[in-house]
Length: 193
Image 1 (cartoon, rainbow, N blue to C red):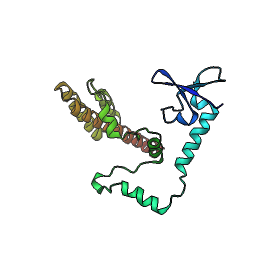
Image 2 (image 1 turned 90 degrees about the horizontal axis):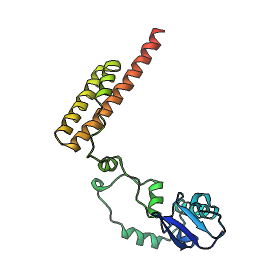
Image 3 (image 1 turned 45 degrees about the vertical axis):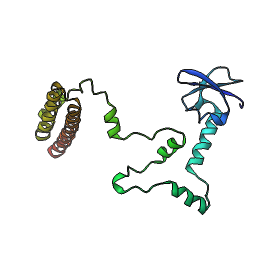
Image 4 (image 1 turned 135 degrees about the vertical axis):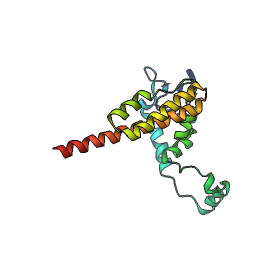
């Protein structure tokens, strides 16, 4: 089906758009679309023409055509070379596709941590830390307990950011203790047979 497409964007019906305009206006595979000849609205990923458009766009991004050398130099002049201290992680192919589609690249772990709502207390790790201390590994379990109690104390002192940081460390050491315990029990069972 070709012609004019309508899309549900931000909870509103918008359009009409041509098939080629759909990615530019923010249509994604999960966006509902409609065009003449369709019985009802359907997701873009269920429409063969739209899927073909996205597949061709992805292929073009993954397989760029050769560019003359003079154009390459012009493009290189646009970019400033950053010192190593300012360079971030290398972009993945998926990040490149998102940039081509006009979306932000995937967030890093630090960005996700920064976006957490720090107005609610973090999940208490004290109970889990006690369990891994008793049943799995005493030394690393004690480290998990220390971080869990520090997190709770800092939350009560209204230092939310540091409380979340210590809670993250408590989770890490609880996991380490758990896996050391599993490995220890496995070795014990193997040696006792």
